[in-house]
Length: 210
Ligand SMILES: O=C(O)CCC(=O)C(=O)O
Ligand SMILES: [Fe+2]
Image (tube, rainbow, N blue to C red):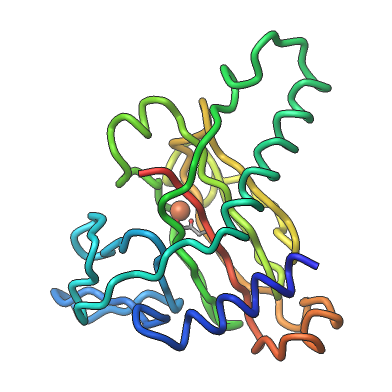
């Protein structure tokens, strides 16, 4: 079961060098309401830049495990099959380009965690211009996920992301505003908790190509 493997791999990597920490902003002292670990390249929330070595502690981010890259390719293939079924298009890649992830941002939200509306726009101009997708896996407790064309909470659409859900935004949707308004306590699947002892909260992995 992929969810169990995802949790176990993140638990192991999360405890080692380059593992989970709570990011914040030096200028204001404010902290993000989540724990973060980056794989492949490190994303610095303060400078909003990617780096090979994490400036907060000099650690190199762990590599993206092959299992994760495989899951991403499977998710993109699945999305292509859905697009092909729904729309009569010659080339699905015109709607959702393929992508080889070299970045994964792993967030862990406790039950009081959240993430404000933002765009993912710190990847290269090439990646952004091509609309190379962000592929997001949710594991553990469910989340209220908001998205929309503007940074406006009142206009945003809401969808519940459950454990095992995969969300992909690429092509025309690549620049969508999105965020997590709340985590729904005690909503994680029992089998997952029994097999992994995942703490209360939600793990989210977003894969991107730099
Ligand atoms: O937790 C989520 O579903 C979204 C995470 C996210 O938007 C990000 O890491 O940029
Ligand atoms: Fe994001």
